[in-house]
Length: 156
View 1 (spheres, helix red, strand yellow):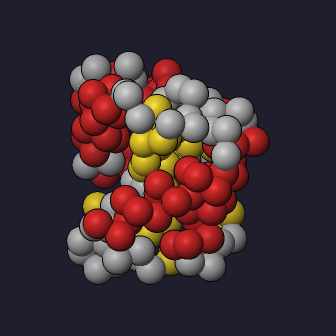
View 2 (spheres, helix red, strand yellow):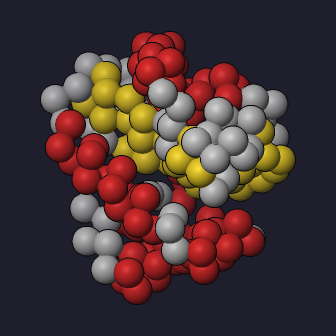
């Protein structure tokens, strides 16, 4: 499954003001719960926090990919948060994060989850795609950019 097929316009949040990583994780957990993907925002938040405590999901180049498996998640889902201001995220390059792709998946769905993480990584190594995502004015434009990047780099 492609990121562009999984990411929905109503799961793209542009220029959101959040002060720190804990606020980002809470925002993501609550968004997944509001959409019905997660039965319990607090349980998903605990999973996201537990994953971050093992190792930061800040992969560099201003990108964070917080993710968690949870028995309270009904289906794999992804959301994108473009922050109004970069925040510290304990990224591997020690730079702040301004793009967050959060993933939630059922506890039984690890292989699809890992495939999605690999696709995200490939897309975000494309500097043209990252620039376009950072400058997209609407969720529709951003989603179109992601789909074009996937087609260009062959992220199937």
